[in-house]
Image 1 (cartoon, rainbow, N blue to C red):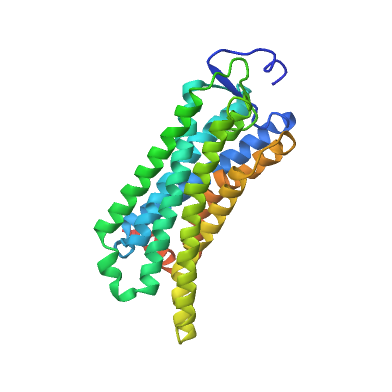
Image 2 (cartoon, rainbow, N blue to C red):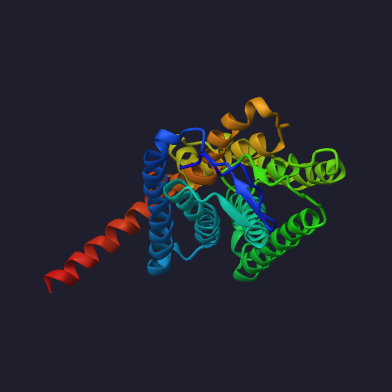
Length: 316
């Protein structure tokens, strides 16, 4: 399948080496990716539909959750279908515009998700630390402002990446050792010419990724301190359960994406990094609906209510 693919260079396209080292496992990789993609998309669409159909879930927390589901669906759909095509057909080429588009949507969704998670942390902070002011502070206008702000910052930040890459002349250096157009893997094609871009991206990652993660941690320090002051154990459990799902998603998403994107790459670790990248690109979006349904009584109640109504309609 891959014998002659590296013997030539086609102008105007990159070659994604993906998991071509594992030639005998291409069908297995395709099957696993297909299953995870279908579960991820259907699970996020299901949570989105449940929130839309259930009136008592029309709250700021679930409004932001719907934002997350949309972002997760977009970026797995930008990356995984192309990966499946490559594994099943052996065609590992991707055009420059296609690569830049993939890079843009990936950076946009990842960056915006950080801001949305920070907005959710702020929502939980106000709900637990200053509950009497919650309705005044977290109103529909505030939610819309935070959402627009998050998407706008994510868009502006994402536009920078393909613009910077488009200025680099790659020549015959077109083999990206990754399963999608990962920024650092692209920069590794011409490391001596892209050091300034690499530095800029590192600073950007620290400024946006780590700053939002730091704000989320600060919010939860105040939240935990407030929960510990609650007199009754049932009150503490109720307060913590209202933010446990969000905290779980934050730890899964932020720690995996920040660790893998900010650490320096080298040739010996690239194969391992590709496998680990599947954690935050596939596994985390797949787990988000499960975490929010299994660890959240309101969502579970909404699911049971909607399923019961659907069965009642069928009986009629």
